[in-house]
Length: 533
Image (cartoon, rainbow, N blue to C red; front, side, top):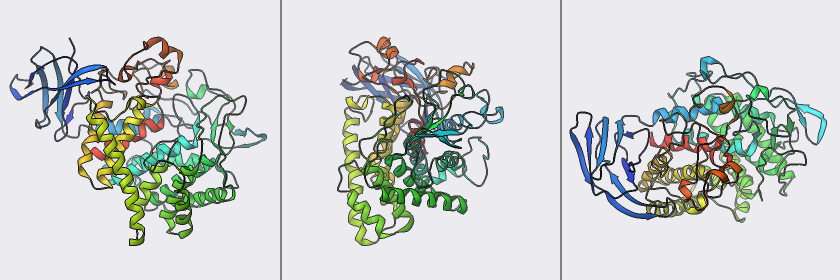
């Protein structure tokens, strides 16, 4: 018999409370631990959800607000237990934020902060320049990007943007939030202390002429060993215009955020952003990146750099107010790119968001309204997708691709921006619906964040999680999620052809196209949780 599915972490007292059942039921009761009926209602017959491949019935008991442990009992005999408590999302926020600490490279993770999930200093040797191995540089630090041990500028800039904008929009959530990392509880909020670790590495990736190396990694992915056991030679791979532009953008953004805490670090970031921007001016043509022969680590290639350059100009304009940056930004807007995209491969939304957050004179308000409309139109589109989903997932069939949970969470970010920045409160509910889908209200009855419940991520495609000898998974890691076109052999073998998109998932270490983790899948979750808190 099917069980109603719902968020595995329970519910916030004042939040949305929903359960979804793939079997007909008409009425339900909610009982407390003493067996007292605290709420009763009728299931809504939703109908067939093609992405889930199911006929669905839904219960909404959001009016129940008293803290406690409960059981939802359907009249067909199905039941499920849950809790309502205050600050229900705080443990998830702390865990998904601390995940970045567990991904630190170039240092040892000690029991004081990492508990069982320790490792020795890793990847601390000098990196050779791929194009000229007579040159070498220190490039230690930063975060391991994903299940592998590479570190990539465009991916890191995206993750940093999600986290820095989360702090920019919701500072009250983070100013006193401690996640127990080195320097935790200091003047610098923990989220900014963790971001600084990545930013300090990024500064090492800039060449003397302002260009930024695209990535640092070994030539080939390591075996499934602990990071300190990956001792192959590190290489700095060629400069790309995308990496240089994203670097300029995120350093400029960070310079404004860190200035109240550390003016010297802010100055360093801004100067690096200006050097990168000068390189971009001196190199106006697109300089992409493809893995050179002999390298097969992550590529992160893109087809153009107009959106990256736009973001950089927007951030530098926000820092300086100089017309030159504004003129270049307006010229770049003539190119065709998304003004609401918030991912590593398309970053125009970051530039538009920064512009919206600027205090502009009246002559600039028309352009701000255009950016505001772009976010609102996208929120309307996503709201329609959400209404067509039995699980309130604002996802099309095409969105269930490699890293679908990033799409789910980027869509949550759009809803949050529509509320917080654009001022349309009606979209705020979409944020919580997307998070509840991630946390277990889905056809798999599965929480895609490690460490939360029995049916949660336990076997990610993540080298230290496999090699550390610890039975429990490193907590707070966000899985890539369902992928209707599995790309790896294990997933192709385990997922039957014709499986509905939302069910194209299995928790298996070999299924990297389903079950890998990355820094930019965790970061939008942090943003969405900050909005809710």
